[in-house]
Image 1 (cartoon, one colour):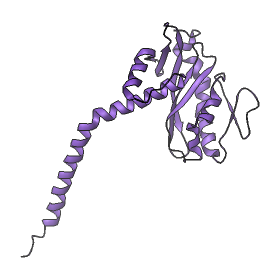
Image 2: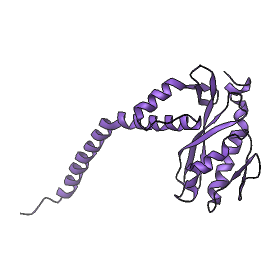
Image 3: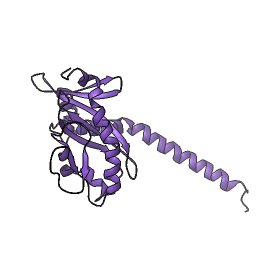
Image 4: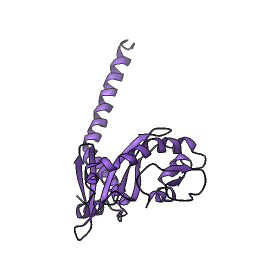
Length: 202
């Protein structure tokens, strides 16, 4: 028996509708879990930038967050404030981001309450090449920023010889150059963020 000429079109429409509905149903059913996972990852990065322990369990991350960190906002966007067990402010963390070599690079950087010293930074997103530009997420690279005074840093192709220098990643010139291009203006502008304008400390 000869099939109707429009059968393939109708079949594809029905198939697309069924699969589309299934995918949508899965997305709706898992949305809360996905959002909770993304929230826990961001909170883990912020805790790491402050130098605070990052639990492996997402629920433990939420508890650590509730005990130490609060999200604030000023005229330039959101930032995070961390306090110690005694209620004293440990510092402030600010999101940053810009174009990398293969896609956006985003992260969060924490400074002491007066904005005089970098406590740490963590990269929340990047698409740089694993083993090359992707090494920006490795501890050896991130740890170079700890203790530096916020301000323009010089990326050098050798071990740093003094304050204000950061060793660039060998073989990833474009990643290092692009990171410096947006991170340095961000660092210079930190002094204008509301919690730091009055000398910090809230």
